[in-house]
Length: 328
Image (cartoon, rainbow, N blue to C red):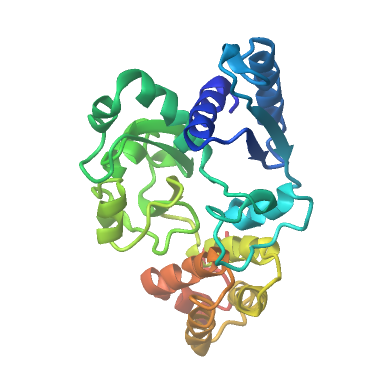
């Protein structure tokens, strides 16, 4: 969106033509102001060139593009909450069915895809499907944008073929753990990964099937790296605070469950944690997953369930020492 917005617009135009749509929307989160400005500039150029608008290049086909800026709600990453926001309502998930494919934006059949998907379309049209499938694996063809952040020397976005080992991304592209420290953990697909990975998973191939076989989800491809001196209880608290803050409040399991997980994690950090709190948090998590209105609730439990499984000893150190053992 920032550096090559025209490939996104072109990919969307191809998709719109394929389904016979005359309107397309880009929902841009409010914080991404520069990306929105770039998209608006590119859209104006496309209209001026006659490749958007009425009777495109004399084809008789009309196509309009609307750039819709959101107000910063994470929940609008959920497709039906996104549609609600574009229609001018509060960004909250819709009950399904009906699904967007039949009753989407303004109750019309709607295709909702990620920016990354549409950006691939012009290259596939130009070079062919076989070229695209020459990258990646048989079941996960093509490339993937991985965002590496946290305790790495060179954080950033890296586009690599599916199936690239996590080790190549973390130790190669991102330059390894910052300061030469040892790796404690990493998320294969962002905070929403159902399971954090330890150093023993570094050779996991980063494709949908391999990551799932290793016990987690590839998700957004956001690899967050934790060095050996990071407190995983505090990390879980920060993530869970985020989910509690971003919960739209529509359903009780997510609204109340994230609140209570935050409260319990704060007790550990404040030196008031108890052994039974570990089981209590996992019990709360079990009452969220599969019972919330959308996937945000399901994903919100991952920091708690992952850290209590992989780093239970750190929770017990918090209990024994009456606070965070990583505080200096």
